[in-house]
Length: 225
Image 1: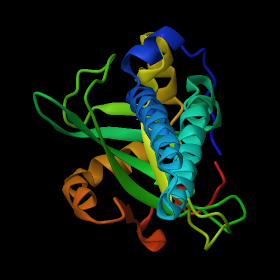
Image 2: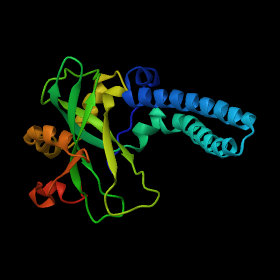
Image 3: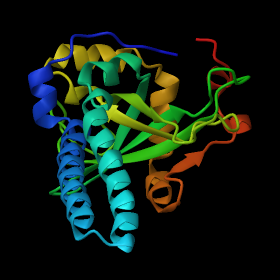
């Protein structure tokens, strides 16, 4: 797995990293829900009816679940960790508008014990892209965010892999350029050649498009670099 080490600008990341912002909103909503469920539990117990006790148990479980999410979310959204554990991958601007930019990224869905890589195209729509011009075809180095929701590992592919720009974690244009150069030209070229597939990726339910290994360049058919 290709790592890219750099000093994360936490202040910058908190301001522009959309994953951090989304997790922050999730935490607020979860804690608010925990409070409401807690009040509801107390009220149902106060009613002192058989049916209210049954509902109180359900409300209490809801409060516990929401509280767990609210307390766990900050650990999930640590900016440094996102960029430390993620794999450096290429992404290319595929579409722009006044309000958002769509990135097409090349990611490896294979799990560590797999025989070889399984490349796929994924898209991400971002509201901000500092350090970039946002022109179609522009190269945007990114890191993967991997999520396996299943409690046990199933199959050889990860369920969900997304990509977040390096530019969400640093203001330093030299770092962005260094990350860009650390990605092989064959990967950038593969994305450039498949830009028209971004619209198709957005339409599929899985939000990813697996690439046929037999149609990949030789350099991408194994883990060797």
